[in-house]
Image (cartoon, rainbow, N blue to C red):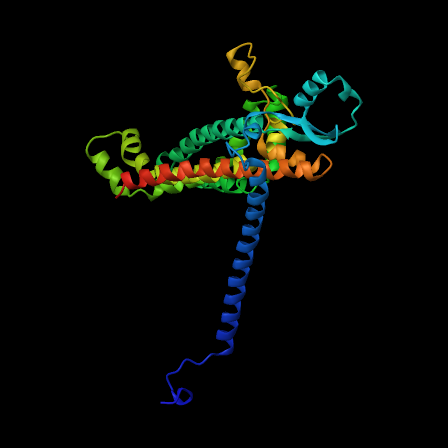
Length: 347
C-alpha cells in the first residue's frame, strides 16, 4: 500500500511541528551547554596539567604542592635565561656577589606553590560541613519527627527555602558583621566555618528532611509497637535508612562551600599567609582563630589583582586544576560512602 494513501499514517499538524521544533531547540541548547562546559574543563585540564605535571621523574611538580606562593624573578645571567622564586633568588645572590647588578623582572605569586591554600581549603570544607551537618540534621529531625504541622512550622520551612536562594556575598557580609566584628573572632577559621555552614544549612536541612520523610512510616510504627522510645526509633530505624540522602546533601554542600570566594574573603582568608594554622601556636584555642589561604580566593587574586602574563597564567590554571581535583576527590568520597550505605540499608 502506498504510504500517501495509508489512512493510518501519522499526520503532522502545526502544533506537532511546533512541539518538535521546541524539542530540538531544547536538545540543541543542552548540547551547547555541555560543549561549553567541556571546553572550560578541557582548557583547565590541559593548561593546568602543564603546571602540575612534569616530563621527568617524579613527573609531579612537588614544589607546587609543598611550598607557599613566592615572587618570581626572571633575569639573564651570563647569557642564560633564569627563573627563580624569592628564596632561591636570595640564596643565588649570596653565593654570586656579581648577581647584585643583574636586572630582574618580578612577577607576584608566580613562583613557589599553593600548599597553604590547599590546607586552608581542606580545613574550611571539613569544619564548615561538620557544623552544617550537625545543625542541619538536628533541625531536620525535629521538623520531620517531632514538630507538629502548623502555621509556624510551615513558615519556618518557607524561610529555609528562601535562605537557600540568598546570594553568597550576603552571607559573607552577615558573617563579617556577626562573627568577625560582633563576636570579635576577627578573620579566622572559626568565623569562616560558621559563615560557610550557615550558607549551606538550608540545603542540608531540606535534603535531610526529605530523606527522613522518605523512610516508610511502617518502620516507625513497628519499632514503637515493640516498645522503643521515639528517639530510639529515630536513631535505630529511621536515621540509618536516611543517611544516603543526607550524604547527598553533603555533596551539594561541599561543592558550594569549596567554591565560594566572597564569604571566605570577608571572614577567613588572607591573600598570603606562609604559616599554617597549626604552626607556632601559643595555646590550643589559637588554632581556631588563625586566618588561612584558600584556593578560590587565591585564584581570584592571581586572576584579577595582579598584572596578567604568561607566568601568572601557569599559576592560575595550575591552581584551578588542583582545586577541581580536590573538590572532586571529596565529593567522590561522599558518593562512595553513600553508595555503600545504600547497599547496606535497603527496604
